[in-house]
Amino acid sequence: MTKDLCILGSTGSIGRQALDVVDKCGLRVTALTACKNVDIIEGQIRRYHPAYAAMSDEASAADLKARVADTGTKVLSGHDGVCECARASGADTVLNAIVGIAGLEPTLAAVEAGKNVALANKETLVAGGRLVTRAVREKGVALLPVDSEHSAIFQSLQGSPGKKAVHKLILTASGGPFFGKKRAELEHVTAEQALNHPNWSMGPKITVDSASMMNKGLELIEAVWLFDMRPSDIEIVIHRESIVHSLVEYVDHSVIAQLGLPDMRIPIQYALTYPERFESPVGRLNLAEVGRLTFYEPDYETFPLMNICRSAIERGGLYPAYANSANEEANLLFRQGKIKFMQIAHLVADAVERAPRCEDYTLQDVLEADVHAREMVRTHIQA
Ligand code: NAD
Ligand code: MG
Image (cartoon, rainbow, N blue to C red):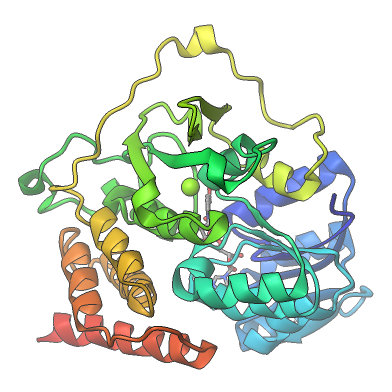
């Protein structure tokens, strides 16, 4: 169980909910990092007294440094400052709640420094799964899932006699705000509509990923790396109520699931207190009140990003990295009103089609793939 915690991305949706868990479980905070939100992190520093803080944005770091000069917190700056917090803050666990591939190097820095990593930042595993899992094995640290589906699978695997006993993993998906709609109806949807998620309150990037179902594609790849499963052994099922967070089917056809209210503080807490369990700040699940749990096949025709991701991880190499980075860029352009919703899938598919073949890769290869995939998306929309 975690005692001293470093939170990367502490001002975001996951970061702030993690601090609720910190309060409830009495953990110590050794470092906090963010990108630009100086107001929120200043308040967090004054409340949690971390030894270190970092802002990836240099101007915000300078601002924060001046504002907290009266505290004992050392403020670092830039991407290197964030990595240094992951490495050097004296934490036993680093919670990575950064959004996007910007979380990859801090994850590697934490693992290389021998820290356990509680991972919310799924893009890390999608883009660099081989690098991260290899480093985790070499260092003998724990990689604990925070994503609710992966936490559910991790919990459903407790007591499993081993991988041979597992037949398949079943990821549940809420279906997002556009469930039931067909392609023609999605032609003109706006970012505001996509940002209106029915069950979860999350950061803007993942909320749009949930509307496009890219989130489930990313989670499929995340599950491949976390649980060492073949993509063909991972199934997706739509579950509108977001009560069953995911399931494991064993070879004897027993299916074990984890249920709970849709509140990220449950999986965040499990990652931080594992293998212990503590009272939670989240309410109890009342099944009679929920009444009905429903399940549907995904509509792969309308939401092709799930299969684009499936094929990217089946092909391996840098294909998932291209899918992830093209999506990060397209997701942003959609939120900025520069492209239409349905273009996101086209741009991701195009980047994956044009990605170079390779078997193994280095960190440098992934970072170059990131630049290249984003360029592909931008030049495509300028053309
Ligand atoms: P968010 O946008 O609310 O917060 C992101 C955090 O990362 C902020 O603290 C921000 O300052 C920081 N950040 C942004 N860009 C950065 C950069 N370039 N370098 C360093 N820090 C940077 O996002 P979120 O919803 O909390 O999601 C965080 C991660 O957790 C994502 O990978 C997301 O997919 C995953 N996740 C989120 C939820 C959820 O409920 N929000 C659920 C499952 C998984
Ligand atoms: Mg999830």
